[in-house]
Structures are given as C-alpha cells and as structure tokens.
Image 1 (cartoon, rainbow, N blue to C red):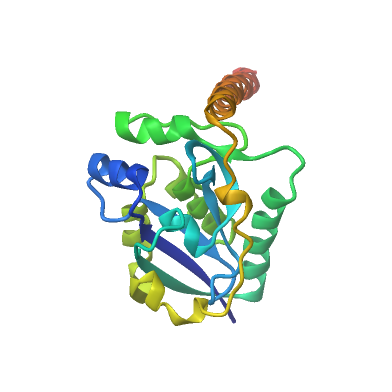
Image 2 (image 1 turned 135 degrees about the horizontal axis):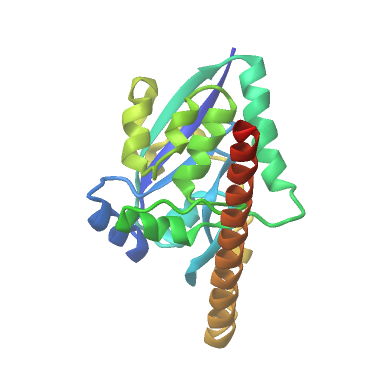
Length: 230
C-alpha cells in the first residue's frame, strides 16, 4: 500500500479572500501530492506572483501560498491509502499533464462559472479543484460523477474528511522542513504591459479551446444520435 496526499489551503492573498467570500468556503485552493513532505505537490494556479489571472499546471511550494510574505496559511492534509496500481495511475495522470507538449492552462472560465452557477468544460484546462478531483477519479479514489459539476475545495473536504491526517498551520507541518524549492521564476516581474498581454492571450486561448471543445462534444452527440436512429 502507498499514500497520496490532498492539501486544502486558505491562502491570505486577495484572490484567495475573494474566492472564499463568494463561495462561502473556508478553503480556496486545493493541491495533490505524491509525497508526505509535499516536495511533489501539484495543482493549477497562477504562474507568477504578480499576475493572478494567468496560470496553469504548477509544482507547488510554500511561498506560492503567501506570495513570499511571512503570513502563515491554514491547511488541511488528507492522507489517502491507495494500492500500487492506483498510485501509478494517479502518478501517470499527473506526469502526463506535466510533460504534455500542449500546455494545460488554468480554466478561468470555470472559476467564473462557479460564481455564476455554470459549468465550463474546456480542452486541457482545469481549476485547482477540477484537477485534484479528476486525478482522484483517474486513481479510482473518487467516482466519475464527481466531475459532472463545479467542485470547490470545501466539497473536496466533505468527500475526503475520513482521510484527515493534519489540520493547522503550514509552517507547523513538519515534514515539509528541509525541502528546497526553486522559487525564482514565480517572483519574476515582467512589467504591466507584458502582464496585460499575457492575460489577454490567456483568455483568448481559453475561449478558443472552450469553443472547440463545445464543437467536439456536439459532434460526438450527433454521431451517437445517428447510431441510435438506425
């Protein structure tokens, strides 16, 4: 048997506070780790500290949660026992996204959809919670019906509560001590004009993928209808 770890966090950033207010949740971010010391923790989040609107698949580290400030973060860690086969399926799914030549990006449309009560499925795009839940589904830890609606971190808490192994401050989570992370790119600044350009390009790509995904689903449904018609 092995274990995987899901981490929910209540980040002290402006975006984190905004999400918690509008979703009426205690947690606003979710991640998944292949190791107890969280040195292989992954999620979908902002690429750089200076721009909360542009993001994608990222390797997490403590400074990401606080944007490099001294604030502490409330976290909850779920330790989930899995078989070797489940662990490998989860690892394979994560590494497939990590090594994908076609960039998997943050699904900002789905994040907006959570606030509006709409679901926006988009090609190779996830929110942090979508990614965690989809990973657990790939490992047969959760059932596929969990992906049929918008998921927020507090709902992941409900699904995994029986696996709780730690609840408290990130700084007090001892296993993370001694782990070194490369944080240089995260704190890199590129200027306002470049950030605006990155943001516009991100939403252009996201909307384009959403439209293409919608056409794909419509085409598949049309093919199914033709089969049943005959």
